[in-house]
Length: 79
Image 1 (tube, rainbow, N blue to C red):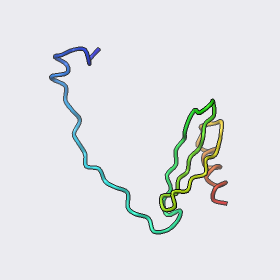
Image 2: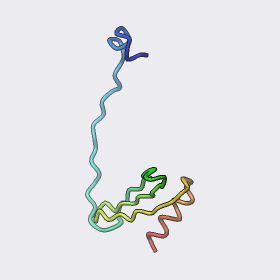
Image 3: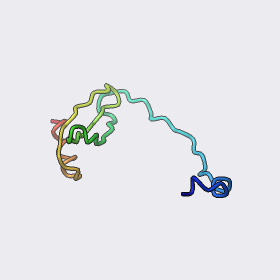
């Protein structure tokens, strides 16, 4: 609705632009990891953990989204 209103589009305020800050470069494996959920893919969810140094990622299939399950997946990778 707002996108169809010429007056609204002319007077809208754009959010302030922020400077992008790159991640610091890591020097060893598992110094920094990135975690996320991927899916649904074919009705399945995947817990993704990526090591920023080696770019290694174990795709772990799971069916729940709760945080203690994600913590369990992290421990499974670390062992």
